[in-house]
Length: 234
Image (cartoon, rainbow, N blue to C red; front, side, top):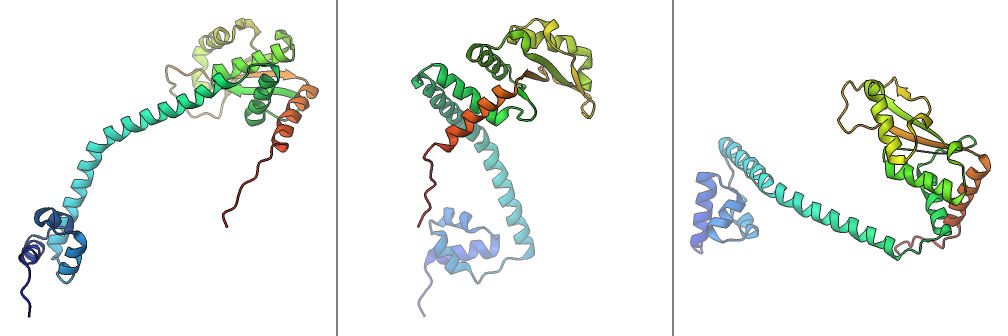
């Protein structure tokens, strides 16, 4: 019978007497985990050793997560910023003209607009989106500003600061506060507290069934005429 290698004897002792994991034994002996698996597979740990090993593994994982989370968070933050910037840079390559702006409005409306009834309507918590929607209606289709209905939708908890919210949207959209229609309250909302930056939702609406159908026709036809094909792997 061939004598066992010295490292195997040490490994077996560490496993049997101390209940160490393959990772721990590999670090101490320099023997690969695949080799250890062959050497130690017949050595059973006691219930107490199993419990201690599990406790150490959980502690090590928690320690690793605590150390790696700030690093990963910063790395992901930078990666997101780079991705956002590469997307933003595409804008500089787009030729700004009416057809492009009209298509941009149509795709925005197709994705986010209200498409029922005889109206062209957009609701958003983002003033930039509502501002672009208004600009497009007024400048592409020469809609009169007074023909656009603006309305704020807020939770019941925001009732005490209604006037502040209207002033915020009026300033963001360059509309007089008195041009906003009666505020709509969400009586179903269960929120009792609101954050300091709460602004509700602003809806901009222009009643014109023909313009609505024109915009939808533009958006759907653009999609239908693109030669998009999804290649299936063979």
